[in-house]
Image (cartoon, rainbow over all chains, first blue to last red; front, top):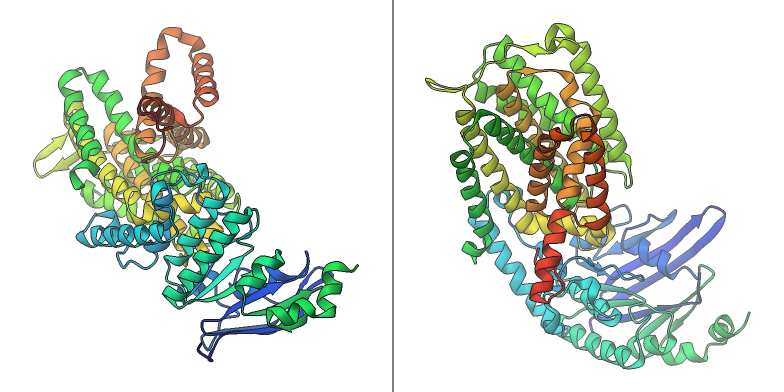
Length: 255
Length: 319
């Protein structure tokens, strides 16, 4: 495992009105690490996630990605730098087919511009072929080849999650952010997903930050875990250490 | 693959050619020309509304702006009509760009409100700048289109020119809809944040499609001015904007041929409803309500559903 830091959130503060959603939160992720972020409901996990991916701006603190201060970058620019995310609530393009969903992700990396698109210049045909090839590769990787032309909205829930994952992977991220990707999945789907995540991580040398409500899933997937509660980091360590941490137990089981 | 992609547009070309061979009377040709001009505007509006999910309630303003700029440059300043038409769409594109710039930064109904306002402002300009536009009584003396020594003054020649331009517009729209941009437009329509998360500057795409749709409207306006050679503000008011939106919705949002169908249907419908005399507006309104209730996907959506049932695949798949 590489030791260099790929992402660092430094002293992040975020208020929503009078509520302190995040209070001086710092975390860092090393290259090719799987870091888990857990915490009870309302702990600030998704807020932190949205700040890292640039969808909301913090009131204080910095986010450093690959050595660049991205705190004020717009989210699409951050994504272009190699950070891709999935969403807690499913966000597939439901009226588009599975392959088209993934192709939108692939389109981002193709070079053809607006005018070659408008006039159907050869470069757009080339881009189109590249997008299809790439999308088909990831379609197979997540095992959705049988659903290639199905409207994504018609898929069962678990398969939609895979569409989202494939769509995130096709943008060739270095850092993958997964926001409660296992929520709503049954046990066998969760196991399959875990296996798939291990596989894609190895294959594409991914660094993964995974937010999860479900402890078991996270404990198996993550190499290191950060625990948030009421907008503060209350514990950090290996899954085994975290499971024994009295503060964590109190946060989950206590009041 | 390429041939299959262009099969529909070839059929469209054949229909464009067949129409004046079958319908040769002036009235029929005239309605045909209006239908084509509507197709141009509605196709642009469909890219904006049906594909990218952004609403414009002021597109008649862009049609009018195109018409007036063409009219003024050709009649008052004796410009070549094609140069005037190009100048018109460049200017309309610039206006649209500056309207889009602030409003599309925001999510929600800001574009609808801004375009509603813009349409009204333009309407006021058309009717109040009497010295330039002729005011409420209209602008007279617009020349016909010319090419070298040819003057397009008969309905059949105007039809040919309009049909050729319509074909180009449809071809360009089809290109936009078929590749990368079309996919991104549709994705923005369904979930803009998810598109942003993939690394797409959605703002850039939204401004782009808005400008394209305004430019198409301007071209239709210029053609209209040179067809009827007399224009007045009444043709470019709020009512017209709503008619254009209705054409997109009735035809089928997010489907080029749906918009085309809607434009044709609602151009001819009032003509057929003349037999109802004073009651035509009631029949027109009732028909619209029925279409919206029973065909939520528009005419194109209904056709696709029927086709889908035949193929037993559920329909509306391979857009």
